[in-house]
Length: 303
Image (cartoon, rainbow, N blue to C red; front, top):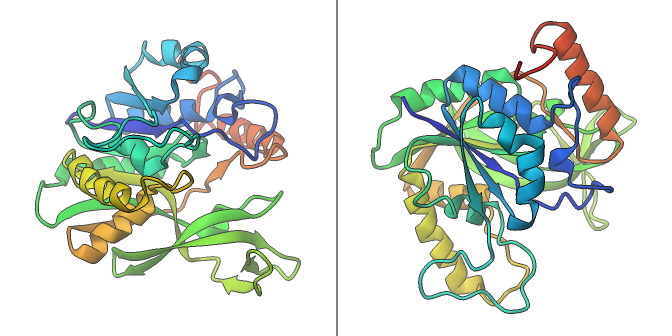
């Protein structure tokens, strides 16, 4: 089966000072987080990777990962440009901010024509998620309602030690996702419990075992056509709003509510980690060294 890994890598990483965080060397031999995701996906059975990037970082991308990865797996690029819009729409001249990661996946239309998994560039997901999602893609049928799959992570396995995080906290019925609540400023306090709260609002306790979406989804190729329809509807309401974003979890929730899709949740027991803050960098380097020392990964991923 042909399956593609789609990597969302156009973000600016505004909370990480000093460079493009997606290109920060973190592994024992200078690997970046994407190296590990691509390595795990290739081992699971994926045979192509599509990077969604900005044109202005293409050169850095080729230098840090693109040219290396092409020796091991098929590679393609998609550019998330502000004017990559459905027919009939134009980008406001004063818009600078990208349209969001839902738009990034929309930009893959015509390039990704096979089953795919989409991930964030700066998140380490572990091997289990890629193995389980590839298995789901193997049996996924192009039916109506369409079925997609999300890898669900326990909230307690996705926190940063150096500050709060935002997470899509999921409600699940049986093995089906029913809704995603974007929850802000989540952190573990001195009482050992997980709290959230934003803009002076009272703290809210959150079950640390709640599933959260880390933006890793398995979809049949036809999903992008459905996304096109929802992006068009989004633009009809928000095209002149220069800050409005078309977010993938929100679009998926709309599709679930309308009955267009169902979303199965497969659980991953792996610990997510990533560089949300610059202070996370030494911890992430230590974790990759530990995984290497345990034999989970070779010292040099690509030989």
